[in-house]
Length: 336
Image (cartoon, rainbow, N blue to C red; front, side):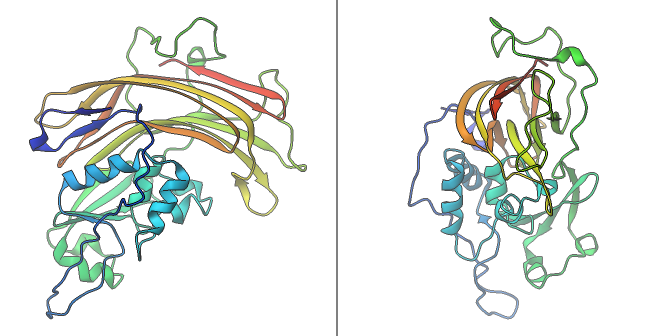
């Protein structure tokens, strides 16, 4: 199911989390080349994805949201000469540079670039506040040469975004976190609205529900992370949930190299999609998932794309999960 926000003319679409899995083996993105540069020579395909319009981008990201993680990897392999942010961070266990929305991480290049119409967007990680540069297409050759002094290029606009994830915060209000209660629906929201936040919000769990430390794996400590996330990238915004297991390895530090016995994850979110100049569009999404022998369970709950600044603004966002790891239960229920 897909919800259209306002009109097709503005090209703003909101996706639902309740989609059937569709794997289109012929799904391809036409990699737009710059056929003639200033010297009149023909160039090769770009090392980033390029779309003729925001509608083309929206159509492709919508298809990617129907794919499982292994299918996303297959899609990327079909894009000749392209390496995604996903492959360059997730598969290298670089959690500090993760974009939690794996579909957007798959369509973004390893250098943080994507092109829509005549604008190349450059996302820069590794700083307190994420930065995005909107670079005119005339600087394409400069980027291909490896030049990075974007601020000094005429016509380049700079924006603050949420590429760099916030660290896991500790809960300030312990009443919001509780073990699952029987009879309470995942969409049973509290009376008050949540205070908007960007990035990720959750915790790191080192003990089971009975208070004992999680069983070690080959003598190494183990933890379970969970978070809700909300991110924005100028023309794209999304929110979702994730539960993931980590092991403190001897030489590599904390790495996602272990599996949970099983995990059940539920979440419910409602709020508004905000686009400057347009009326807010309400959304309400819920999901229930279950998996066994897995390292993580995650879901992009809702997302929106627009040719101008767009925000997913949650008003309520609940998450409930129960993990079994080496027969030990770990559970949480957050209502906000």
